[in-house]
Structures are given as structure tokens and as C-alpha cells.
Length: 265
Image (cartoon, rainbow, N blue to C red):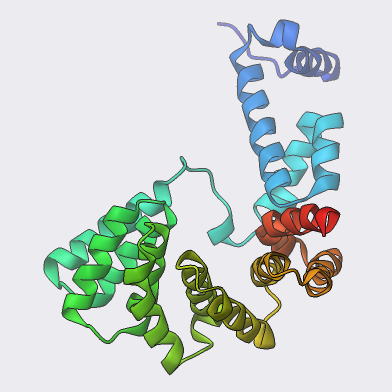
């Protein structure tokens, strides 16, 4: 009968060396498993902007990947961690809403389903859901606003106009100013430049969105008001330097656009 002996320190050291050596490790399933785990932790660290941890994982991969897993990844709220295929959460939520619509057929379920399709860029499906929601509750401002934004993205600004104007007239700050920004973009799409300028100015009375400042600056430039445009663009660049990382990530497209326009203004 054979007796199993636990590996001593020397044998364990050689095994770890082999595990970290890709020339040998490619022949070892454990190496592939460890490499996949390290890549998973590295991607998660980059996604969370944990740059120091990402550097440590690159320099000392196995040990720091394990430490990161227990000290950062496992410590994160459950809603922000976990590996799943892209779109898996949305697919589950779509199935839940479809079941609720089948059994209850409530307006807000149709509207929520439309929001998911809108975020996915499936505008035709989103529009159908919003129409179904409005058939059941024609006065819901959220559905009206989101349907209006969907129509705008479908390049149907004339149809979007009435919905967005109605919501903004009742509540100018609806959806934290995003509905008002959609209205301003609708005016621009309809070549109602003066209305668009006024709409952007109203937004900026209560908010500091780079999206609003940049598009207002573009209208100022088109009207030959370069000093006014530079003022808005400089505000965008200045705010970016002092914004939290999540906001900088969200508005980076507009900040790049502001920098490019400043070079022209």
C-alpha cells in the first residue's frame, strides 16, 4: 500500500516555479487555471481603477491576485462583483419583465423594458415598449420623456418635440435635467437655434453638465460668439480636473470635444 507524503518546502517551491513559468505551465492545467484567475483579478482591478493593485498583480501575479481577491474583490458590495457573461444581467431582467407583462400587463413594466432596450441601442424595440406603456398610462412623465428621447435618437425630432416640451413645461428639472438636454438637442435637430441656445442656458442655470456646455459652445461658435464659447469650454476643462473619477469617466467624450474646440476657438 502506497503512503501519500505531503510535499516538503523544496518540492513546493519547485512546483510554484513551474506554475509561474509559461513555458512549462502551458502543459499544466493548473497553470492555465492560475493564469485565468490572475487575468480576472487584473481586469477587475483596472475596472475599479485600483491602479496600485493592478501594478502589483502584473509584477507579482499569483500572490497579489490572491490578496486582491480577498482584500478588495470579496470586500466589494455584492452588486458590483461577480463574473458573468456580458449582458447576462440584462437578459435576466428582460425575462423577469416579460413574465410580469404576461401576468400583470402594467404600464411601468413596459416602460422599464423599454429603458433596457434603449440602453442597449435597440431603439425600435424600445419605442414599441414605450408606446405600449403610454397606451396603459398616457400621462406618465417618465415614459413620455424616455419615448421622446428614443424618437430623437431614431432621428424623428418632430415627433419627439411635443413629448419633451410637455414634460419640461410641467417639470423643467425632470430626470435631473436630462430631459431638458434632450429637448435642447431636439431644437438643434430641427434647426431652431435660438430655442436651443435658450434651452441649454436654462439647463446650465441649475446644472454643470459638460454635455450642455459643449453643445452650447458649439452654437455660440456658429453665431460668431467665440468669447462666450471659450468661457463654456474652459469651464468644462477646469471642472474635469477636479471631478471624481466616475464623473470623469462618464463625461470624457465631452471633455475631449471641449479640448478640440478650444484649439479652434
